[in-house]
Length: 397
Image (tube, rainbow, N blue to C red; front, side):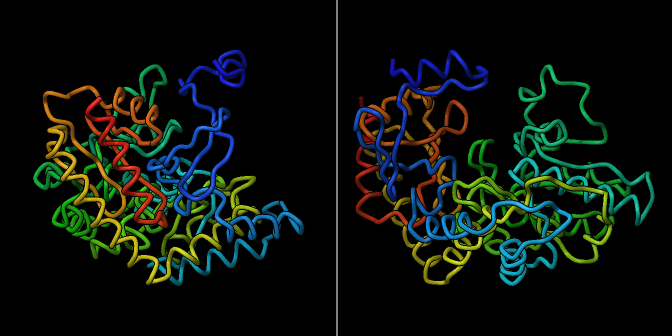
């Protein structure tokens, strides 16, 4: 065992069980470990490293900002935060932005905003939140309660009340659950941790219609699906269904921790001074990196290339599934794939991930039966092909 990995067990809380590999350097889509071994990164730090490792424009943005101003309290604003907020508003439906430090914090802000808006607009009775089975929205007590996976709630109760879960993509169940006491529907356009399952257009349109009918707010959790991953800047633009509130994180900082809540001005007005806040959210360092990332990813030619690489990878993964007999389905949206293992390979996703790592390619899982891939959006076609060849070899070991 490498000394650093051994020290992890000695000093760190055991809520993670990392592999023996200890990365020390990354350039583009290539990661190098302490032993000098190289890996093709098709995991993207769980859809975080959207521009790869040590992307020069991001290094430049970070180092330039680091030499001038790192932090001011929220008693003042700062130029990078305002610039990034303006860019996000110009590129989306949003009129107002709140910055946080993570996706969980962004989702927490979304949920608090929805309840506060309903409280101020309709009264305290309108507080129920509808969410979906197998959802994942974060690890705070509120967001883990709204997420539809009881295993993440076990031992942390009592959980916040007023939250109902219904099956994903089930229009009838959603209709039956809806009522005038609902303040918000919270949904992922693609369930990432829940098995890489995209929403059907009809389902998201139905969410929108029900919210309009019952005076509720529609929240899209785009922590993973946002910032170019879908082939559009945000997945709602792919579906043509506009939420009232949207969360963003992961690729927003491309590895620098940050998140954001996007919403309309008429909704945002209920978060008056003192109602919500964060010490480091919107700090100049994070926002400088975020501005550089969104500026590049939002370019039409960049997104066109993402869609082109999406088509290439989907075709290759389907072909790999046929050749190896390993995948029964390849699903996803954009450069973000879930490869469903056949019944003969059920439960083997973790073992396949380990074999892939041995062969020099980093992939992900979404449960025990799904191999997940989320490479950097700017990975070149040759590197993608090399990584997929290594994955195919891992499938047949």
